[in-house]
Image (cartoon, rainbow, N blue to C red; front, side, top):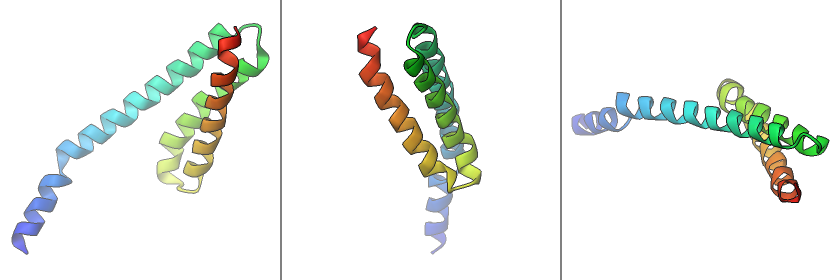
Length: 94
């Protein structure tokens, strides 16, 4: 059993936590950058602009608020997915 505790500490130690924090921060930055880029590109398309803003906000809620309030996470993920579908369908029309 002592070996199991040591393995657990090795697996879930500081390197994993730092990797997870780095990944979450990079995903947040990328999501916001994508939302801003879609909003800037779609000046004439109000629906596409709104989808870009909604995507960025939903992903921020998913990553930041969703870790503390677990009910928010699936809702924010669904909203971000719907916004991504709108972006994917309307962006090629520009």
